[in-house]
Image 1 (cartoon, helix red, strand yellow):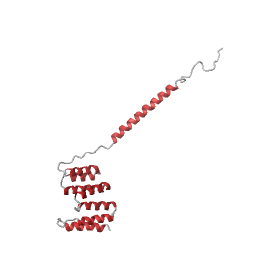
Image 2 (cartoon, rainbow, N blue to C red):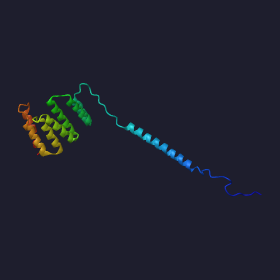
Image 3 (cartoon, helix red, strand yellow):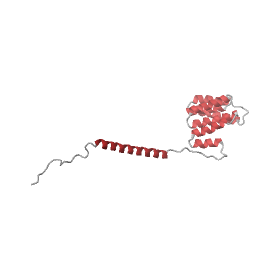
Image 4 (cartoon, helix red, strand yellow):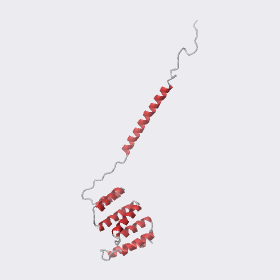
Length: 183
């Protein structure tokens, strides 16, 4: 007769003592997967990054046209740089005041009131007897909602207008309309 044996039949647990090896293998797999996912994420984001836009303007394009184009394409800093280059290339006081005026208008458009104030002050320091800087300051204060101060600057612009200037009466009437519009 055959004897029936009970028990483990001499076999042993194949995982006994190998838990540390399995844990290390699992950790290695997790690290490799994390590295692959992270690498794929960065590669994807780098491809999606907005490339720096370069503008190639025709040689006949004036600096004012370049700045206007850039401003219309929401490139405030680039437009500002165009005007700053123009400032550095001229010695004419009147031209510099006009360029500062363009910088003021640009800064107001992009709600950079601190820069607009700085540019208007620079224009005023070049020629405190010129009406232009007072116009810039009036427009800045109008944009900021400072009606009383804006009116004062419009009045100063009128006071510094030269009666010998071409279109004096029209310019003066325009400044007075701006004062009236603020009331």
